[in-house]
Length: 142
Image 1 (cartoon, rainbow, N blue to C red):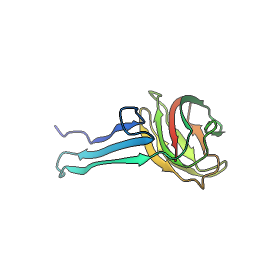
Image 2 (image 1 turned 135 degrees about the vertical axis):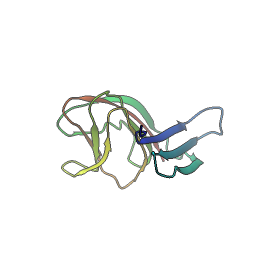
Image 3 (image 1 turned 180 degrees about the vertical axis):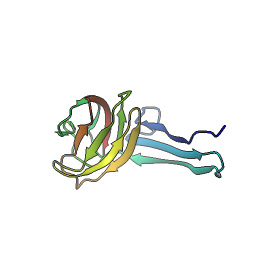
Image 4 (image 1 turned 45 degrees about the vertical axis):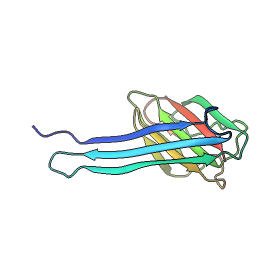
């Protein structure tokens, strides 16, 4: 029986912790691909530390509706590392660079995205498909 395609994109660590040097953010990621009849592909584990120069960060769950809405950033200005996780078991959610723009990032149910948001970004927007979803948002100003 043929194995199903398996994608494993493991977000291993995105944390600001007092056990590390002050103002540090550690990022670790790895990508593995395995499919019957195909050679296995592993993009080596990438690990690095970022000095957090900003003073603001956020971590919250935002309920995303079927109409585009601004991503809630609180007092944080755009620019810095962001982790987004779709907490829904069925529906996907998409991120847009600004209101009215085309979708840039799509996260299916249970998926996540890790990216560095540009300081040039205006207010990013998000939109759910089919039903509302909860989106975990963690961003660190940098």
